[in-house]
Length: 95
Ligand SMILES: [Zn+2]
Image (cartoon, rainbow, N blue to C red; front, side):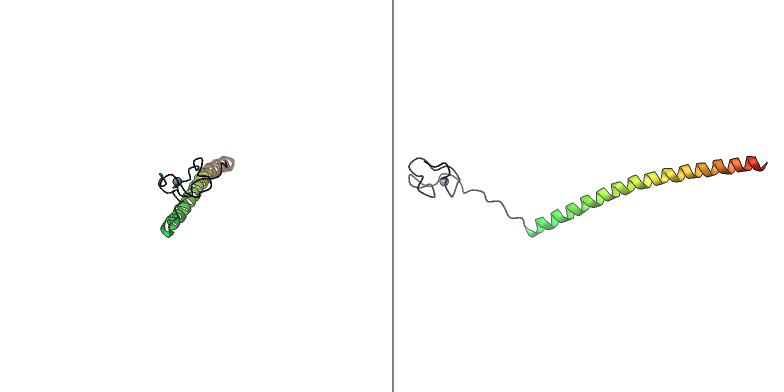
């Protein structure tokens, strides 16, 4: 008896005595609903996945840009403080 003999309709192993058949039916009709075939993705589904992927990429880039611009703002603020400190120092030296 082979373990690989399965009903071509329901995927259930064929019962003993029916291994030589492709489908249930020798002792009655196949009792199971047909095997669910992997549903093909529709064109719309593919396009939607494309959009979702691109939106995820965009969100990622925006998150990164937000991080970079946040750092840029901090550097800019620090630069302003440094310039102010420099100007103050120069003013004191100039006195
Ligand atoms: Zn079957």
